[in-house]
Picture 1 (cartoon, rainbow, N blue to C red):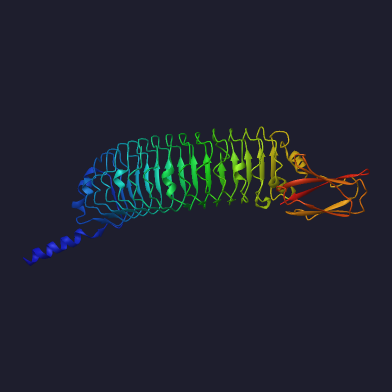
Picture 2: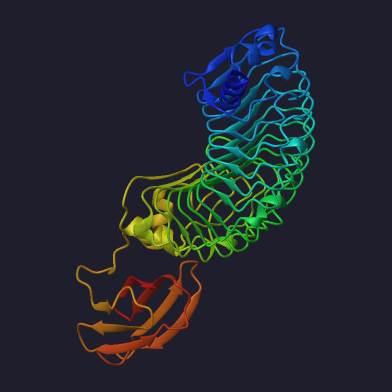
Length: 475
């Protein structure tokens, strides 16, 4: 009698013990079927589990398994669901389902609540939904859904609140929305939504207000709006908006004030066909990296960027063939621009805005201006429009001085001699429009410029004997 009790105790203890710290590989159906015989009481595998057999048709032999300490990799061709993993509650490492061409549902994973690493669905061509993941609340690394061409919805993830690193939704042919991510509170890395042909709505990620990584939205041709993303106020990484043929403006990003990395709109290699203006970026004030505005054939206006005051890298304007002016970039502090490229914008003629003019006066890096329209076709044309390098006197010695320069409120014109009776001062803007004319009668004349917009202005002093031209920068 005592022997029976002892044996029962030993069996009960063994049934709850962890096991296989080195992990296990299943390559045949018989290895799955005989798991509980070969490893009695093994419910918590400490190491990793790899299942990759062409003849494995079910996972029923694993129905006692409650946790996997390492990775769990499923590389199968015959299974249609995850039945057999019904007791599984946690995976300490990655859960990877790759190239499971017949997998239709995740039935069997209803109790899975925790994944310490990445949840990765890769080339599961028949997978239609993620409904069985309704208990999942935490992913420590990334959620990656890639080339699941029958996946129409990601509902089932409503209880997922934390993704430790990246969210990647890539190349899912039938995926129409991101419904299921409404309660996602935190993404610790990048969000990449790319090449989803029928994706028309991404508002479900709008519960996030701070993105700790970058945001890429690229070539989702049915997407017509970023509506629903109004809670996003800051992106610590990069912002990349490429392609997306249905997007005409960036409305939906209206409360975005800062981007820690670079911003690519159109991008240096790829571009969209419909973006007409940048409305939606009106609150953007700072970019920590470069600003690329490239290959946007219908873009006509940059005015929405008027409050952008600083970038932390290159300013790159390339192949925007409907853009006529750089107005909107006026307020970028020139010392924050590392290098300047304005290239191959067919009708761009007005480049002499304040930020560009000030950069040309004191460049921090390289300058490449060419193959634009007349007025902005090369560096010399833009410098001429800005007055950069222009002699401040038509005689051998200056006859007057301007100070302070730059100024935000008032300038003083000081002549070296008492002005003749017919000496006049005229102020022009960079388009040659006459803004003010005043007769000069004293050696010092004070001019109020407080009401002038920020920009570069030319000052001409004339009398019967001389014509002198100078410039002043209004801050």
